[in-house]
Image (cartoon, rainbow, N blue to C red; front, side, top):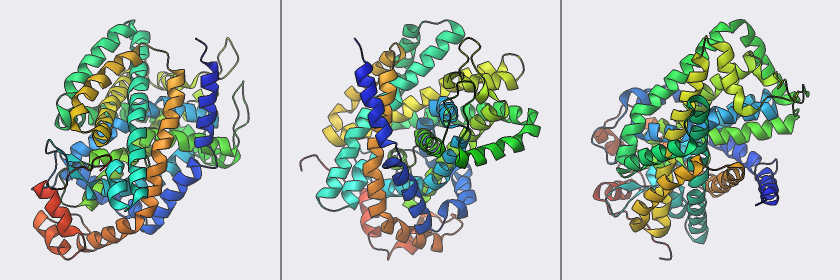
Length: 497
């Protein structure tokens, strides 16, 4: 069956959604607006937020299903995936080194968006029929924005999220794992698919507590392993690092001339691919991480918002930077295929950079293992996102069937060519972001007001549960939030209610 017409249509739709007239200005504009409205929160509180998320890790006595650290690693699991390896290379391969600069901008501004959506995820979370916390844009858009607009935005997000979870969070990740395992070990994709589907199902049937335990153990190991490999390469090429950084900055505003069949880059292409791949990597503004944040045991929405904000910093400013800079300092982005004379495939760039920069086969193994772990963790994180939105649309009764279906689709992704799925994933991602970004702008006043009050009373993020309740007692909405959060009376809305 010839899928070329469908592929062309999807590519055109994706180009419009991610073009200069829709998501790019909306993403950057929302991030900038929230940064200003929150007084540069991501810069002022980053150190304290990292301490709270990575060292303190939990709020004693708070309501929720998983610790703050597990909520962070679940969100990191969903974002640190193929986008950090293949996505960064694609952005540089098409947009030039300057695309990395725009990924940084997307990350820095996106930290304010990530904070706001995680704050709202906790602020408007509910308790489902199983007694578990549930939240995210599918709830806070409807609960925070009164009237038909909020309900339409919430349901639109839920519908797009369910579709997107099978693409960005499932088939594309499984396909990356299977093809890399086949290339490295000669194992058939069907065998990899069967093992991966079984492993996924075992974890998913345990729910968010099981996912949180697995990601809390897996995510730190995989990030440290990958970053250490990248650090070795950058130290080995430290003399070329200043020039590489200068190239990233200058090319962000000038573009890159075509070299050896290189597609070439003008400013808009560098911006477009930097922003698109930046969001694909860190998901700031997408609203997905708010779903994991809502399950966290936290004494106040501000605290989990700050913890969740660090996810974007770790993903983009740390992991993405190591990938991008290794590609630039090793010169791999300019290499050509000796047979065709054209630029090497972006899918191979990161592997080539690590192979050039590390001794023996170390580079190959780090990239292969890193991609497998990154992609598998993404599958786990996105399964939870899809599950919560299925629950919002159809009720709790379909959660277990969804988990089984999600695991089976992993096998399909491992054994199927996915050019159309990749294009469809980009579209679904963009459509998820639209209602969430609109909601963030509408609800920004609430976020700014409650954030200011909390940080005025607990600037060092050391307040106990009793301290928080004492200085929040007179704040509008606090008593209602605590009553619903602790008593479990804040139930999920029903479609058509």
